[in-house]
Length: 260
Image (cartoon, rainbow, N blue to C red):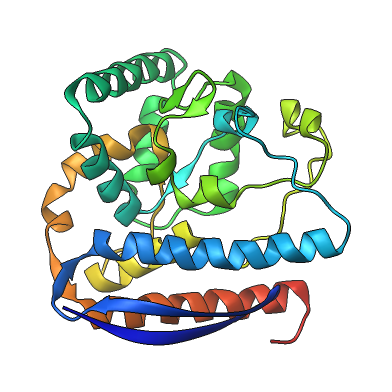
């Protein structure tokens, strides 16, 4: 059973109004992931519209996988949802994904990064951007392709993390060959859904906020499979999700120095 709610969010790019079908029963945290992503994508469409109004063009196209060499953070709910998605794949495709993950782990271990990534995923406290920066740079220096990349196309496109969905650029596509040294201009993001879902997970479980590096996400989700099975009232999760979104938007308005 579901109950329909009209939701309005004021974003720096405009007002977002939509209807949400909220489950009335107890649900796992993964059930809110598609709802959160949908709201994030609708907010992203407003940012795209504003960019076009400014005469800018989104450079990102299918097959342009330069950003798939960056270290991608995922929230715990996304990690659980991704593990479930992979488990439901046809056996042959699931085996290919498993093989690529194993190859990726070997490469990262050889460069001393696997344990560092795992330490971030399983940290007992929130890790600051300043602490993450050296690891982000070391990972990007490898130009190591995402283990879910197949022939330069995302193999989990419909289940890809929010961070991947949110990264779009308006600078020339060729600049993305070196995302560190070239003047890449990213489209503003009103709501970082991975961060919001991470805060939601911390709130309902009484743990520290965390983001899990994508290369270790499935292993992390497997280790923490017990908490993934917990359920909460659907209305509670949606209320808390929207609260985290409103708080994030408030900070974004302040950062951009514009009024709601």
